[in-house]
Image (cartoon, rainbow, N blue to C red; front, side, top):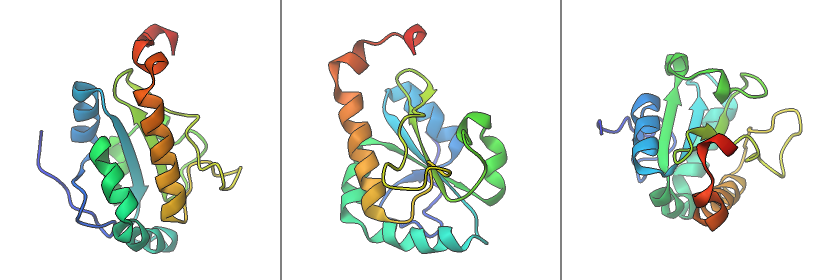
Length: 149
């Protein structure tokens, strides 16, 4: 694994990695990844960052995830799967390292129907992280073959 990339406004308590390193780490370890896609000029991103940085819940949950921080032009290293309903920002996409798939159903349940992966608060992000953690720990998920997804 490569070194971390830093939080870029999303906090330094978590080890953030690049998209390329993070996807490779998720697939090698079978852990889920949380991919945060944001930009330096984006007001909503700048508002969300400190909330994530200050969340002890997210910091604790992060140990069960590969935490991927995609900033500015780095979005070019991702692919279409990471903008399932558009290129708005910030967006938070969960990736299943065990099966090599984006978890499309893992949306911000209390959020906006038009922007399913858009978050404005740490508690809704933490709720999604907990849901993913429960999913990946379930026997049905672990026993699922790649072909069935």
